[in-house]
Each structure stands twice: as structure tokens, then as C-alpha cells.
Image 1 (cartoon, rainbow, N blue to C red):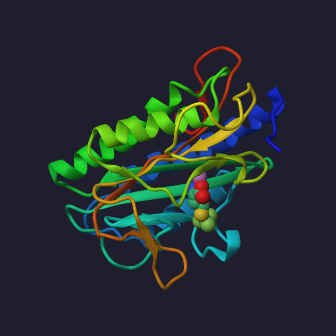
Image 2 (image 1 turned 90 degrees about the vertical axis):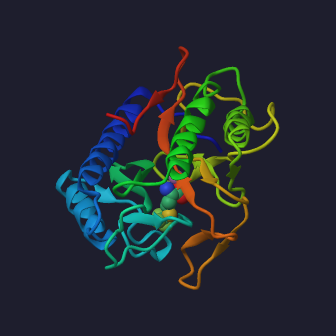
Length: 249
Ligand code: MF3
Ligand code: CO
């Protein structure tokens, strides 16, 4: 069942989304060569708790951190550790906050110091593909219209979209119906309706779309070792045109 949120529920989604957006802004200001992902994880957890929210990922199916920190060829769900970030790395941070019973979920990918032109392009195309999807996140379209727009932009730029992990409905649960793949033919899946809340999250590889899981049971990496980027926001479909992005300030 796809839940349709009332205005008062959307207000709560906005509050949760704001904590996520502010936390991303704080982390972005800290990212530089030498800092560790464990330090970033601590900064995020402290900020989320200080905001009277709970770090949604912590303990979710026993996930042991408040952020997912995925470096270079890591696609999603990377573990934080004590390795200092190095100039030239790219770091995807995904985080969630639960406030007033509702969840916000968003991911960003950052360069650490100077990064290659190809890495810059990967990060830019991943973010742009989210916005291409947004053009179809409106009443009158279907879920796979979003998917198709994302895939088209990524592939036009010579990159590939991950198939094994997808976006999702979101609300009182982090993962609700429907699934929102980042690939597929247009015109399929549920019709979009005002009050639907979705987490749209393209995961994009420079090389092949195939991924594999590391022995820690969580970290997803590209099979070919190529760089991967992630960009995600929680949005709400409105009755009047553009969706509202809940995890941007
Ligand atoms: N944002 C992610 C998702 O949408 C990551 C959650 S995984 C977790 O699925 F286990 F860390 F929570
Ligand atoms: Co998500």
C-alpha cells in the first residue's frame, strides 16, 4: 500500500527532512583530507540527536553506524572507519533522521580536496539525473517515468545506473512502497498522486552497472572497481506542479 500523507504529516516530514539537510551541510563543511569517516559519523550522530531526532540508520537491520560512508568504488552502505580521507577520494554520505515519527533520507557525494575531471563529471551527472527524474515527479506521471528519465541522462553521459538497489516510498518507515528503480521503460508502475513521499536516489558507476557485496555483509562495491556516486533526496508529490524537496535547505 502506498501511503498518502496529510498536510500535518507533510509538515512532520519537512521537519525530519530539515534535520537531514542541515546535517549534510555540517558534514560538507568538515570534509577535507585527513578527517576520518568515523569522525564524520560521530559529528552526524551528535547533530541529529541534538536536533531531537534519531539517526534512522543506526540499528536498522543491525546497521552499526548513523551514516553510510561509501568511498570511491563503494556504491552504498559503506562502513565508517579510522582511515583518513585522502586528496582525490570521492565520498558518498547517506543519512537519515527520524523526528516526530517521520523519516527523512538523503545522500550526497563530495570530492575530497582536488579530484579528477572524470570524478567531477560523475558527481555532477548523478545529481543532474535526480533533477531529470524530478521533471516527472508530478501527478499524471507514473513511477517508471522518473526511472526512465534518470537512466537516460546517466547513459547519455556514458555512465551506468546500479540495478540492484533502488529508491523507495518513505514516511513513518524509511522503506515504504513503491520501489523506485533508477532505470526502466517509461509508463509503468503506480500513478503519482499528491501526498506521496518518495526517496529518489540514483547510484551511478563510471564503468559497468554490476555490483557485489563485501564480506562485512553491507558494503556494496562496483564489480569492475570503477568509481561510483550517489545522490538522494526525500520529496513529496504536490497537487500543483513541481515536487517539494524535503531534504534541501
Ligand atoms: N538511504 C538508504 C536507503 O534508502 C540507506 C539505508 S541503509 C541502512 O536504503 F541500513 F544504513 F539504514
Ligand atoms: Co534511501
